[in-house]
Amino acid sequence: MAIFRIERFTPLPAAEAWRRVTDWERHAGAVPLTSVGVRTDPPTRTGTVFVARTGVGPLAVDDPMEVVRWSPPAAGRAGLCELEKRGSVVLGRASIDVRPTGSGSHVIWVEEVRVRLLPRWGDPLLSAAGRRVFGRVLDTLLGD
Image 1 (cartoon, one colour):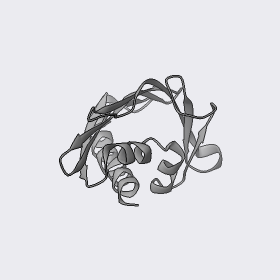
Image 2 (cartoon, helix red, strand yellow; image 1 turned 45 degrees about the vertical axis):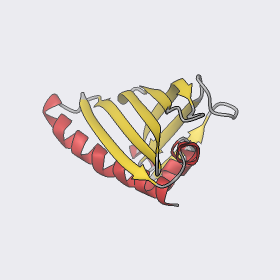
Image 3 (tube, helix red, strand yellow; image 1 turned 120 degrees about the vertical axis):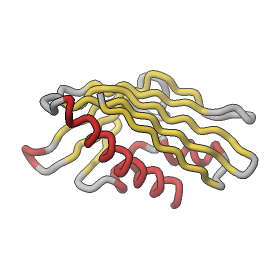
Image 4 (spheres, one colour; image 1 turned 60 degrees about the vertical axis):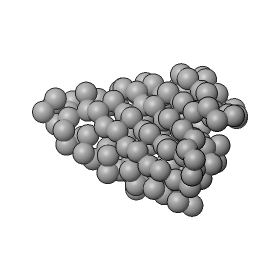
């Protein structure tokens, strides 16, 4: 499995950083050729399912995910969202941790991902690509 970790500090309060990084549809704006659709009714909670579709036409890949833990930040407490990737091509899990700080918040994104048919020797390349792409996602979401 490819594993990567991204951290960002932001002046945004934890509740606002959380709202931005868990607004699933907005993730598509930072990833080329990607759309995101939420398949369950709002609000986001444990059991929410959404699908990131990346690519064009028959070359697109679906990455369905389910929220398996949903604990928004509150009263100085960190928030934690855990996702399970449930696709036929992309498998794994991700966590998004938003911690309040004295000057805003600290966002930590950790992902463990496996792409079927990608040999294990490709994991370091996948990790590097994940850090780059999702680092840009966090920069975009937190910078708006």
